[in-house]
Length: 257
Image (spheres, rainbow, N blue to C red):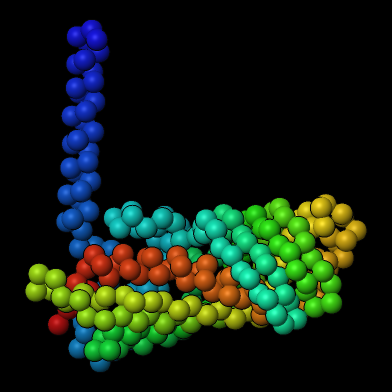
């Protein structure tokens, strides 16, 4: 390799190492207070304080939280999720790929209940709407009609009410106490849903249009069976965000005295 080429390679390696060091240093140095408003654990208005702090975070949803390697939350993207509903009025086997969920920047936090001694946080929220799109694969029966197909799909949900329950346990590291998150359950109820799937029945337009209209007319029954997919999709992503925050910052920093 000629000398100039070797010199360029050495310089490139040095620059890459410097960037890596700076990135790691920045990530290590970030404080909880740099990312969101902190609430004192003995504050009699602790729940309201946390509610306000979460509300202010909405501005970061579109860009994510680079300091914690959290990607954009609006839209959220779920690589793959599956549902096997074997009985009831909707009996389907389905999977969704690259499922996008848009609208969380408009979330309104109704209430928050923080129970630090028992490592539990409850959050009730409201969304005017959220919209999903992605590729689907489905086979089964909806009410009295068979359904099958694969291709693009979209859904629109309005008047959305959600509840998240975060549970955990105490974890002590280097004399600091952390919220060892065990789970986050997310439950979504909607006032109305419109669900549309392209390419049903191998692209038979007449049958596909009939099924999409049927699903719109019977959206409550359809949504009640697809609800586990929405709950799991949203829960999976928000669970990852919450865990990154709790793993990064001790409770002494998140909720100072």
